[in-house]
Image (cartoon, rainbow, N blue to C red; front, side):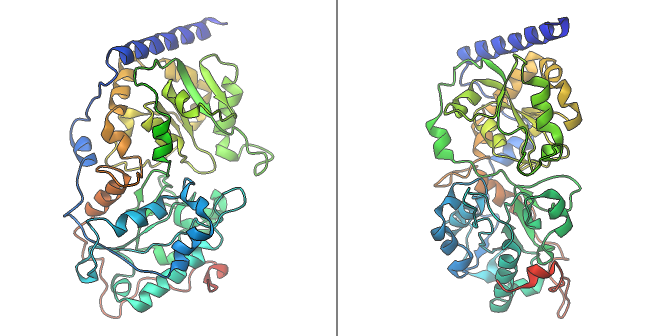
Length: 415
């Protein structure tokens, strides 16, 4: 072992020991975010907005779920749980004339392969069909062409409706959604598939399942860096370098034999417990910039190491990601060990105290039933902060802003 490696190991051990000592002595200690962020996370949206939920035929939602209940358990399930939440939410109004926002419940990711992955190919036609329906049967879409409507679009690349970035960029956002507010997991600055005004949300991770794997909070964090997942996707990227823009491959090639890094493609039954024993959890991009690891890291108090250039993180206007996480540029992955071991121990400990704040964890989850401050409420808070609507929302009589025949020819076929 060289002098540099020995020094890095010594620094990492010092951090692990410090984290363990603090955990044992003050397992329940948390730290509140100073200023607006802590307050924003605890905002109550009730009384600040009213939402009208369109009653669509079940073929757009419940029938799809009945056909394939797996849709409830995958990381795209936020669209289903948001619908369920709004049906019984105090912000729901049955009088569309008094609504601030209109919600169209379309389960665009509930078309799964045998392996449980969503197929996006029918999604644009399904969404167009739903919009045509509400535009025909209600007057509210036509008066704004969707500017006071919101849609949950949790595909890899949101309303671009494709799981491969190159093809998603080529498609662009469905033209009929150009004026609507999109609530989506995908977020990357200056990207075709993220329109201005979108609300970026966490992917769905099962709260009850994570709850059953909680270990005592005073458990020492004896693992310095932890990651489980793919490093290469030879099936879809046989030549390498395209998947995760090479960042995951770089992690493996540089640190597979590093004693500070517990990384593997194996997914052990102790995965959740291992995250709770770790100081840092890697959250690299895959095919898309986001994954459930970010949610898991925050819930389990493991400092997320975010490797995804220009990512727009969930509820970025409320959660202070710079204070709770570590950002590493994709090109800097080969220096990951020195970057992490150079973080002062007091900085690491403060990040852990902030992560221990219950409001931080709650904001990342879609629990059943809903709870104050959870992801449902953060979405509503985001919508409330957009009110009142500006003068450009409602169109003048006879005015039109959208092209109903725009988009790839396949999207224009009936659904």
